[in-house]
Amino acid sequence: MTLTAVFTPPAITTKYSNTTSLHINTSSTLIYSPFHFLFSSTKLTIYKESSEDDDDDDLGWLPCFPHVLTASMSNFLFGFHIGVMNGPIVAIAHELGFEAGAFLGGITSSSLVDKLGCRRTLQLATIPLIVGAILSAQAHGLDELLLGRFLVGLGIGVNTVLVSIYISEVSPTKYRGSLGSLCQIGTCTGIIVSLFLGIFSENDSSWWRTMLYISSLPGFALVTGMQFAVESPRWLCKAGRLDDAELVIRNLWGSSKVEKAMEEFQSVIKTDGGDLHSRWSELLEEPNSKVAFIGGALFLLQQFAGINGVLYFSSLTFHDVGITSSALASLCVGVTNFAGALGALYLIDRQGRQRLLIGSYMGMVTGPATGLIIPELSSSRTRGKIMSFSFSVHWVCNFLIGLFFLDLVKTFGVAPVYASFGSVSLLAAAFSSRYIVETKGRSLEEIEMSLNLNFPPKEK
Image 1: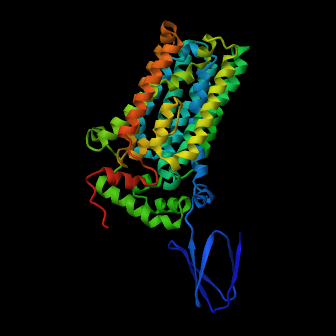
Image 2: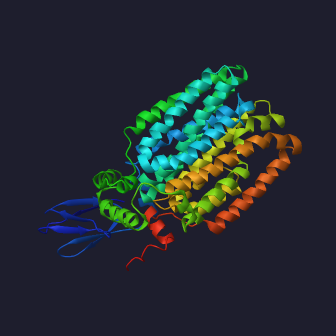
Image 3: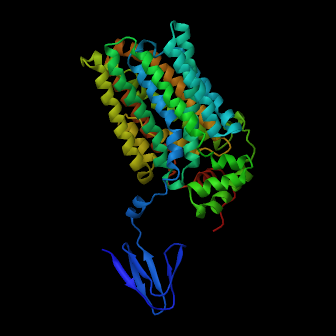
């Protein structure tokens, strides 16, 4: 229902239940529907009802969306290469080149992001990814193929670390979870596209070369797009570029957020250290050691819960149980994961990270919560190092799964292997319930100050 009110006093002041105020001129006509109106002889006071619908109609995520979407293209590339390995060149899916490159990229990414920032590092790391894809497509021998896969892995290893950090640092607190889910959506989309294209490889043994050529195109788009993306305002503060940081916050979060955000940034920098060079030894100190343990454990459990094993080798698994079109069946797996990622996008800022993480493990599906919760729990100073360590654990476990998965299936059969994956999933859900701190609705600085005893308590 829409209410119309016409007033004739000299002036009317309107106050919302928050800090916003308006001034309405003589004989103004005010039309507004979701409010209650209380009248007096000289003024109109409007009290806004609190409802979840207001949050749904809020478009505060929109200014940040193009920047996050551009960065998440690196996850599309990651997913695309997972799908490429699933089908036509599955025989080399467990080769050392890709995993070695990804591990090296992951472990060195923190030094690059500390020094150059996320935006520039994402651009640089995508170059070997493009070159590696083209080199792999043109390979006429195993050495060339392995070199190409190593370069692809190097770019993927750096980018998977950086995208999670970048999105967590540029997103408004209220929408950090939903925007962070674009990482998983990008990965799922890449898998779906590559699995769809992989259907043609069943009748063309050289089709995989075309697929690798295609994989270089999003890389060019990522390098170009990041040229127009903003840098993390938190990194800009650490680099001493305060005016640039304020401009980014104003453009992405709104002018009303600038003062509070800058105060929090500088408070963290003052207490935690404001230089751009963190040390690996800092991960041995509390609370960094606990967050690093949680990050490494989550990725270890995620891998041995079999989530990526299912994605990597779904074609062969379906073939072994008698499904003739294994590529089409694998595509269905990809679509299912995509649907789960869309559900996570809607739920993660409503139900929280912990519930979603437990649910993803209970259902043995990939989810964005693991990659999101780790940078949220990490301190500003050591966020890059903790993410590098966590993803390095991911790549080591990923290599082991790729190396032994097929042998385990051949030795024990599909059912026992999947049953063991289910057992690890239950363990991962219990671990998440015990150790994960809910971060929904809290800024990164608020989370850090609550976990670090070095921060003085807030004045009440």
